[in-house]
Image (cartoon, rainbow, N blue to C red; front, side, top):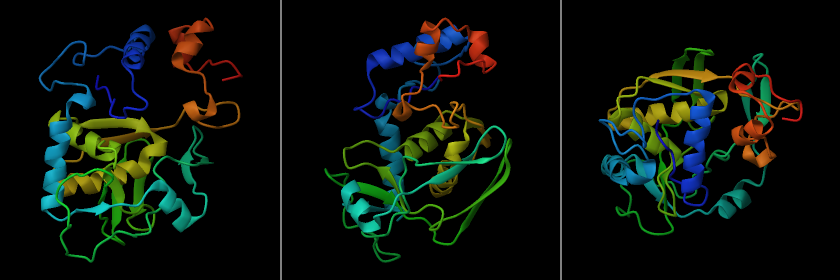
Length: 258
């Protein structure tokens, strides 16, 4: 059980406690975690910043990162277009929905190839981006969806590994933790296929072994949209309060309103 609680704006102690309680109610059990300890403690990402800083320093030292001062507004103005990405539903049909990682970065702050970044400290107000190898095909075998292929620089661009507010990205934290904790299998939603391609590049740059990947279909509502807070989707806690049992949820017997 690893608590991915890096975002200070969205992570609260009561949310973490509720997540643990809900998972236990659902029948999920774990042998290591924030409540149990274990050989790879701590299991809260908010307490593992030294691990991520070590990875960041290695990436900077080897020329994989560069500082970027573009704000989200700057990128919106530069691109001025909505972005969507496809992910397969339970029947294998493509679903279209905006994702959090944004459109392909236009390279505004990208230095000339081979040049080292002028900044070698985190600094305030600076994003750090991973320079992807343009045109390289990143391929992997997904244990659920089969062969996957993404082209760096086309399907995804230079991505942030350390945010301007001092928070390491999901990509960097997960890659570093998976390696440090000896994770051999990663199971997650099909909307994160491109995140896997990014993490494969990070693993190579950091000298980490890739785990096996399994991307599963997402739970969706009656309109075919994935259950997410942005859509006011029912949480596990809300379903519990409606009187559903763990078996209802595990067998996907959800109310139509969800």
